[in-house]
Length: 333
Image (cartoon, rainbow, N blue to C red; front, top):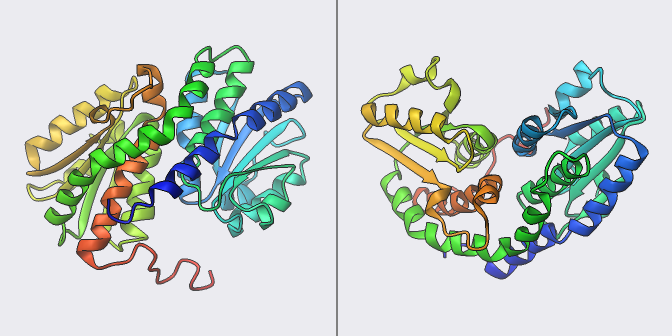
């Protein structure tokens, strides 16, 4: 597979899933001390990765669990912040400036802080109450967030399925490698067909809305300098659909949760207008060892792997490195 370092991928994924005992011990201790609300704080892609777990908590719990953009939180504040607030942050390098500043801000209120990162000596890891370290460059953070939020809800008696989910996650490295292998020819064909495409329309909903936003902004825009429109499938019929034309390149992200019919409806309409619709559906991947309910919960992780194959092939056909930036961490802002 193009640019796929399987041993490293397996090891990183396993290191995230392997944090389960530490996550469970920490969650149990924090809940015993008293938690009234949870803030999931990120910036860019890490902020988008928080949304499925706010969504999960909203479905199952009365505990306030909200995602927040780090920079906005600092300026706008949050009335819920206090000594019984749990603030969770993620950062691959542990150096994200807005997240560092957000940690300093929430700590003024006595909030308890937890970080997931790959570097134990990074500024973020050294400035939280609890740093849970995976292997360097481990991405995405969905595994850790799913375990943490899932454990919180389970301990509160609101998520009976957590033990089976956590057990099945041990099989995630194998399942994702197989998904990558399945996706490889699809990704190569997509890239060849879209070598000269300069505008994409992306649709996703439910727990996949965060990934839709992330792939649009962080990959196609930031890493490939392509123009995009991204729209939640439940909001599809309220504005953005007017941009569709018969040659518009549309990407639809589809999962296996209760919101699937909403995205089905948008997909059906799009196919009446555009001749260039690509659907990336987690149902197409084997995911051996995962029950139907847990397949739905790992959908963002699966699509991250699948679309990682697409990204590498777009990089190849376009001759545009995924690491190339003009402004991000290049210019001061």
